[in-house]
Amino acid sequence: MAFNLSGVFRPKFFGLFKKGKYNKDLFISDLIAGLIVGVIALPLAIAFGIASGVTPQQGLITAIVAGFLISFLGGSNFLIGGPTGAFIVIVAGIVAKFGMQGLIIASIMAGVILVAMGLLKLGGIFKFIPYPIVVGFTSGIALTIFSTQMKDFFGLTVDVPAGFIPEWICYFSNIGNINWIEAASSICCLLLIIFWGKFNKKIPGSLIALIAGTVASVLLDKFAGVHLATIGTKFPELAQGLPMPKPVVPEMSMAVISELVSPAFTIAILCAIESLLAAMVADGVTGKHHNANTELIGQGVANIITPLFGGIPATGAIARTMASINNGGKTPVTGIVHAFVLLLIYLFLMPYAVYIPLSALAAILVMVAYNMSEWRTFKYLLKGDWADIAVLLITFFLTVIIDLTVAIEVGLLLAVIMFVRRVMQTSTIEVLDADHKVSSSEDEEVINPEDTQYLDIPEGVSVYEINGPFFFGLASSFDELEDKKKAVKVRIIRMRKVPFIDSTGINNLKNLIDRNHKRGIKVILSGVNPNVSESIHKFGLDNKLSDGCIQPNIVPALAKAKEILGI
Image 1: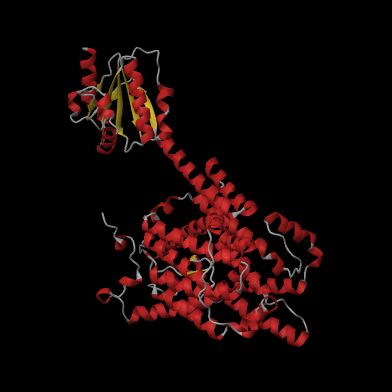
Image 2: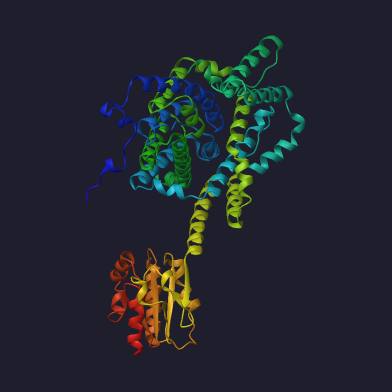
């Protein structure tokens, strides 16, 4: 069968101009929203770039290139793409260990993984990642971002070691070296961000804090001789202006690729989780629906191309997406306009970024960390059952103390374990015998309830009632329930509520039939649905049963049992 790309890849942008759907009013609405979101994205792109261990222009390039591609090729009408706080930790770690070449290769590999997931139609599975795991990731990343910003927030000039605990040991041991002017600048910018929204919700407080902090830094330098640490002191080359980014092809080798598989996988999973989560939030607000598989492919292409221009990993951003919706954005054109706004800023205003104080960027990122922390949700989830609490705390502490890569891998493993645990809780096996009576009015299989008031299970017959999927986690329960002391001659396995059976379940069912036959016990299957029946036939299990030992429901199954017993 030929693979149909159009079946999984249907970008929302491409469908805008069919049948005259897009008009002047929609464009004006998208244009205004795009201009506003572009301005909002400016300080965040610069701050995320620096915090990730790369340059501010690389953060801005990411917002431009990835922002355009995610809107152009994505499966959501509203998603705004670019660098996000979630990637700060993983990007900084990759840059520190493998350098920019390593980051480029890992980002491209992550993009390929995302495209493959979209083509394989795996977009839907991310809806089933347990919420405690998502909150554990985001809260852990938020605390890590907050921790990394304390150096610039308090104006410390020491070399801070990597890792949450070593960072705070360093901070406490250097309390006496706090630059109180830098700290005052950070606190003022933070307060401005917090309280600006009470006066104006259209213009973001982060942009106002960036402008105010920059103006204050210039005035203090010129009139008071007070020098705040700025982007220019950290990246003096920016004062010479910025060249247009040129495509860079990294040198790849199998040795490097094998080392970067785990970081690339982490980037891909984190990108998928964050982008699809943002798309679902947008759907909930607007009542529209995104195409998850198309979104994964679009995100993948963006993360393949963006690093070639010097960018860093990108994904859909919830805050910028909501800003777009709240300011009238209706289609992917909003994200494209936002990318062009940032491109104009990059071309004509970026040299002035050298005057932006690091304290203002630290304040912006502290606020980003607070908004990411979801501390109220975290507190709420601590009221759940012990399994959810354990998963939440394990994911959180692994993210903060060990490594985000480890946290992602363990988190996905915990998601699988939680899923199996939930299924096992809903799948049960009950043994019914002559002492157990089943009312026909409660039995869905009885075609004519008037035929009998009760389903009588005669002596010498036992019934295994299976409720739920019969998979590997449930298969061993037969051994635990089987009472070998009872004189049973016929065993009915009632499967009316079994939606599917896996290969382990088939194997255990086969072993059960074999064991019973060796003991002279006949086995009858009752209420087998078509899917399960197909699996039984495929594995040849029906050949192990006597004629008439697969019955459509319990009534003829009991009649067959009585026939075998000679009743």
